[in-house]
Length: 526
Image 1 (tube, one colour):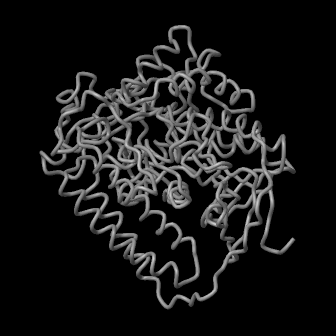
Image 2 (spheres, one colour; image 1 turned 120 degrees about the horizontal axis):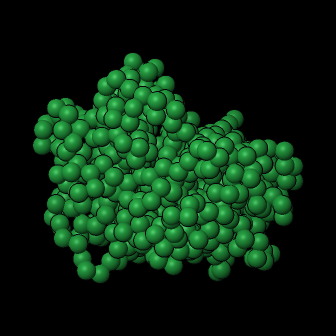
Image 3 (cartoon, helix red, strand yellow; image 1 turned 45 degrees about the horizontal axis):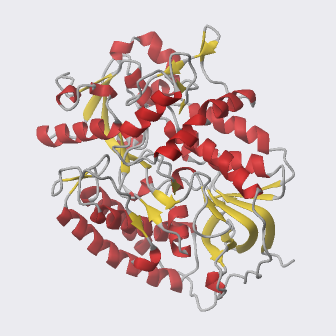
């Protein structure tokens, strides 16, 4: 076999909760290549604070969790999917416990917290670092496995499909992957699974890690997959307002345990917008903060955790407390400045509950997929639940599929490219995309803002395409290309929705339609 060509049964791109669990399942049946453009801990899962939702107490029920999810989703949830995910929730959480995830306990029982939109305490958590606890437990399961080849610091370039090679039946054959030393690997795979996470970096303010540039959505779109409901971007209400902590979340669990949202005068303003106050769904709380900031002409609102008491803060939120102290802030003594920040993409690659896309051999799971679970607004702590349950369903479905004979994948062709002389265009386009999205496609939108954003994105994408085909690929260039593609898809999706629903609020279309409809974009129709 040539130096830069690999073959595997299963190629998994992304190493968050979804990718790690899928790798663990599939490695029992064949060879797995697990690719991540950072370290295996570089994922949104690693940074997840709050927890994972499931029916874990006698006072709770599947039906209650289902209804809370549907209510939060503003009429757009696919109920069959909601039930399929939630029915597996408690089993997945108990499996996490069995493999060593150290969830918090009280008097020998799981300590459950409550977050916005939930009618019961059902959030299992590990202090305020649940994602790290889950990641460490999953990594411990795959680390010694000889069936898993880990390619860290490797960046996916594009998927390879048989249609691109001129064959009539379209199937995903694998992907081209950029190695840290600049070589391009050709990876042939029987099945390819995208678990690449979200796209928060399309905005100036985000809770997401740098890696969240929408890679999976962009690659799947270029391969021919439809996308669904990308206009629904969840802004976490309480991201720290501080230059040195710009992607630090103040977990929703803080409000679940009694923290208040206040203005500079100490007034709890969220009750002006919803009778549930701080425990209203995230879209309502984020819009309330955004509206108060604009109304008062200020840069931020404040989260006051002092009503919780110092012992609760230090016991249940030690990591948040320590990080704030490092920034010379103490939430046991003072309110903390907060702003809404892009947090989660409810839309994504259109899939079924198993992660199956319209292209044979290609799956997408976790945040990069859209099954209809979240509808127009994700219920808090349903994201880790979805990642793990989808990975479980996906692995089961993959193992039932026969892999037909496949055409060989040609090596990467970089003929005709010329070295870069400067990289300022990449930085300029990156900054322009994020500013355009934040100013025109944020929490509140208008037809004119969307038109302006789309015009600018067209020009930016033309500039990026010209640069991409002339120069060698690099991680920065690949991320920029994907970021621009996903940003334009978000704008186009928003332009298709002539109503306000859930996370999409338009000043030109303030009513909510009686009949809820998904926004589905197809590459062959754009």
